[in-house]
Image (cartoon, rainbow, N blue to C red; front, side, top):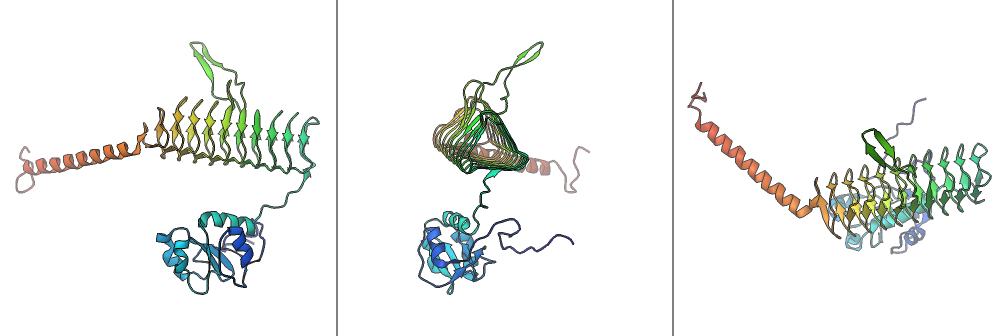
Length: 367
């Protein structure tokens, strides 16, 4: 029998996602941290506005884009900003929240909690006798835990993970399948997605006429608590100083972080960006997709680097830069506007000159 080709937009396919509930409206309101009129209804799941039924809770994020969908929804309840509460149709309960997206994440955790932890070490895992694995941790099939490694309480290690000698993994950390970690000290509640590589040699070498000489990489990777690291991201260990990632930072898939890089608290690194060795990101920096930061460059607190930008000089705090080489966004777009005007003027001028050089038949007089 072929696969089920059901294309319903209802999220949370039970084949892949653990489901809980149903829950009374009051429980959903409490989870969302919102307010709603008392109603005796049960909610069974989550759904988008257009597909939701009376058994579902939905949310309205953008007032301008979702007004029509909100007016037509059949949801039993909707998470909305106070400004949108009067747009909720009759028969649907408005759960009023300050931030619908934050509330949606909390309700998601209610209806789709993590699978229960299965404490213990799988029989196929290889754990060095000197490693310390908390008895509440879960070690999956075919994992390798090196000597003197420490695995904290309630950590979850997926299948085929390699944890190198001396690595420390904090409480409630999660490591996805096929990840490898070495030379690293990792805090609490860190989520390392599948395929991540942490702690390998940095790209350091000396060049001579006879060839390359590898420079020893003697630092570590320090990852503070509540960091998430997306699939197939690579984080090199330091050469002499440590590579460090600050608390609460979120790193997307396929990012590359070089040796000695220092990333502050609550930064965002989007897919396919790269930070060269010894680059520094202060707190709350955003690096958009495919952007690159050169080595030894400092990006100031609260700054934003646009997609595909190339940062080759320091960026002051609270500055938005775009382009390659990167420059302040306002200056970049002013220059772009000037270039466009010049190009249009040149095209118009060329068209006029071309018309003057032809006779009434359109034939060039020089023919």
